Image (cartoon, rainbow, N blue to C red; front, side):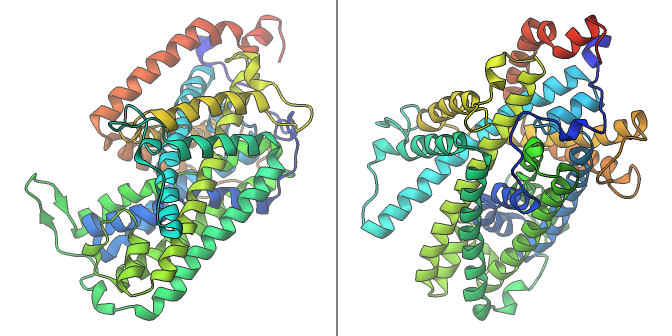
Amino acid sequence: MNQLFRTKNVTAEDINKGDLKRCLSAFDLTLLGVGAIIGAGIFVLTGRAAATEAGPAITLSFVIAGIACACAALAYAELASTVGGAGSAYAYGYAGLGEFPAWVIGWMLILEYTVAISTVAVGWSGYFNNGLQALFGAGLPEYLLHGPWEAAGGIVNLPAFVIVAALGLLLARGAKVSARFNAVMVLVKVSAILLFLAVAIGHLDPSNWSPYIPPEVTDADGRTHFGFQGVLTGAATIFFAYIGFDAVSTAAEECENPGRDLPIGIIGSLAICTLLYMAVSGVLTGIVPYSELNTPSPVASALLKIGQGWAAGLISIGAVAGLTTVMLVLYFGITRILFAISRDGLLPPFFSHVSEATKSPVRVIVLIGVVMCGLAGFLPLHRLAELTNIGTLGAFVVVCAGVITLRRTHPHLPRGFRAPFGPVIPVLGIGFCLWLMVSLRHETWQAFGVWLIAGLCIYFGYSMRHSRLAEQSATGGA
């Protein structure tokens, strides 16, 4: 039993070690975070949550969700500046909770990132085809927009397949090249958001904000909408618009100064996105009645309603850029997680091979890219999308628990950043995340159970016997 919970030793020097090229600044990391966070959430979830759950009080929902995420972000920042490593929550779990919990969370992260990237690629395909129709009057034929198991007559979702392959080629060129591309895409989508705010603010109608919290109603299925409960439900819904800041911590071994830069990147990106989310949701519910926002593209639809069709087209370009950066940063993250797990011996050495030319794990970039191209191009993913949520929330719980554990087991370890208010922040983070996990559907838990069983088979069949930490213990090493 002890070997299941053996932990990696943590030293002050560990965070500055690594095989990958250190080339990312705090600014790069902040842009990585913004790139991962701002995507479909701001262009889709905001309208849906306002129309069906919170009304104009969607701004309050963003505050509540932002506070919940901030607890996890502060915990991430502390562990990222203390433990380091390319594996994000996996690495933190290994140092604080032990090998087996680390493997479980790493396995959850693999599921989360793989499904998230593939699902976003399918969404990107839809926006891309809409853009073709707007620009040229015709898009791709239906059989090139759906896989064979998704729609009758479908062959492959070609745009989804191609964008994943293209991002894989970009990542294979190295972290700095990818960071530069991400910076350009972030500039495009943030410019689109600022354009929306500038165009729409002159069309605000304060009566659309009244009542700020609509009275509670119960539908035919007995489900409650609006009221303060609706604000909380809205917070749970749009919480997942914040997912992505954790991917910043996977770049720990490519930071120029991880102890300083990682906390700046994690907290800075979350703060920027929270302010943008609140501004967009406030203006959006101010220019049209909230009941009209339950559309696939509420921002563009609202601009059309106020006669600003030219801006709606530019917003669609921003949405494409937003989804592109989400895929890029999550793709970056999963390759670094697999790299870290393999380097610890829990996966074959193939996954931790680093290219001499680019100092990037090219082999794993190609392998996981092939898997995601297949998922995005050929399989129906909408039923699996919620699996990204359970993986993310599980990772947040482990990170918050890791902060508490490492403060007890390594109280004198140098920390580049320390979450304030003692154990209050990580305890709140655990509570928020468990509450959201319990609210997930039974089908999601069943699918996760199947994935977890597969992971347990790999751990007990391969990982336990090939663990580097086990080998070091057997030979009396550190």
